[in-house]
Amino acid sequence: MKRSLPLLLLSLGMAPAFAADIPGGGISADNLSKHVEVLASDEFEGRAPATPGETKTIAYIVDALKKAGVQPGGEQGGWTQAVPLVRAQVDGPVTATLRAQGRSRTLANGEDLVLQSLSPVSEVALEKAPLVFVGYGVHAPERQWDDYKGVDLKGKVAVVLINDPDYETPQPGAFDGRAVTYYGRWTYKYEELARQGAVGVLIVHETAPAAYGWSTVRASGLSPVFDIPREDAARYHTRVRGWMQRSLAESLFAGAGLDFDAEKRRAQTAAFVPVPLGDATLSAAFKVKRDEVVSHNVIGRIEGAQRPDETVIYSAHWDAYGIGAPDAQGDGIRHGAIDNATGVAAVIELARVFAAGPRPQRTLLFMALTAEEKGLQGATYYAANPLAPLEKTAAVLNIEMLSPDGPNHDIASWGNGRVSLEGDLKRVAEANGRRYSPDPNLEAGFFYRADHFAFARAGVPAITVGAGLDRVEGGIDSGKALRDAYFAKCYHQPCDAWTKAWDATGQAQDVGLLYFLGREIADGAAWPSWREGSEFKAVRERSETERK
Image 1 (cartoon, rainbow, N blue to C red):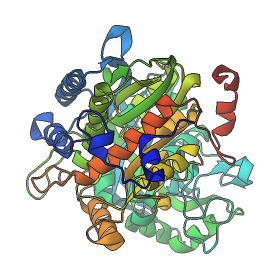
Image 2 (cartoon, rainbow, N blue to C red):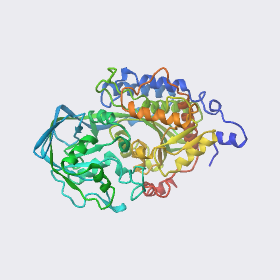
Image 3 (tube, rainbow, N blue to C red):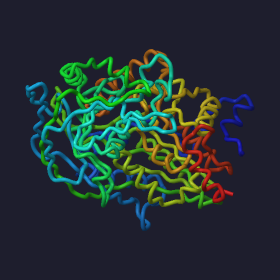
Image 4 (spheres, helix red, strand yellow):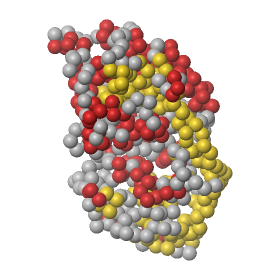
């Protein structure tokens, strides 16, 4: 494979210089910061899909890509790809009542629990639906694991734990220890319990295994939810779904003569059998407003000079959570500055520097994807309706949540992807005097929470790249403290906002590494690949002949 310029310089004992090696004057921290400042401003209203905030966001990104000098890469020669979605939101008040042992307790939506529905109904009316604890809700024959054991859940509401059975065990068992698998994700819980026939699902919230606090659950739970249009949507969704506070679960279990922690330990074994929660029932009623909307992916393009039918993708999601309940300062706009205006800014800046330099051998696509926060909908739609063949898409380099706190010694990717791109990123980082850090927080399950996952499921080698933790000023302890504070206070909250204290120099360094990595792939003849043990390897190998 052709050696990149920074690797060549390193072999000659010369320190690479980003401004000299990258066209267009190098990656500009000022440009990155300015894009975030605009996209995260009040004017953009939190960038929720299918709102006036989307219209402004799409217009800004298209204009920025035009100014960057790339060509339209969307449908019919335009800049966008239409993404049809079904939007569902609670319309009016929610009533919820828990009845057990002859007593009724009124539950407050947003406080005790959050309820929503993607089922194709105009209203939800549960009347005294029995509650059943189903452990972690996992059905994984390949791991010899079945939490259901043939239980009939028709007409019942399943109470389920978040994360995997191994998460809190002393030693890894049938799963991956504290590294979350897809079975640990809330999306899987909802999907599987619909397959199992439950009328409802309540996930027990705990901050550590969920990897975020109740404020994040509340913000997302009270927002509209989205799905792709389906003629048989009732097959894919329970009538009602949501989360409950751990304190509510503890009370519910105690009323059934059960100890919550003891039942959780039992659920961590393959011998677990579902258990009814005494005579407890849930009644719930609320109206649902459903409509079909069209959101948009934005795509810029540089056609490859020699192999235009082969593609490398840079991507980031443009959406955030829109406007919600005001915080203590009276701000209700979830600005989404770090998550993920930083990624969009990086894609725009990468488009600019690539357009300023020699054309790559493979085609480059620069994507700003919609509805990531709503279940990776924009990426999933593109993967199902690609504008360039997935069989000849060499790699997806997805960008998420770059740091506003200055430079780091390291750069990281999300999850353990078992993909050659992780080793490539490590090599490029080291060639430029930095380090690659594997995901330091595998228990958060980030591999399944970013747009690259939609491409991975289709077999395309893909990673999400984000900031490391080893700050140049303060080291790992400082970086971890800042990350933990962000997730505790600002993740999906109004305080995820741009400020004048923003230091984008670290972002510029990270984006510089992504330039070198993408340039190497785009100019090379090699195909990144999944390693042994990856669940996506077989999918990719089925199209092997297309890449010969």
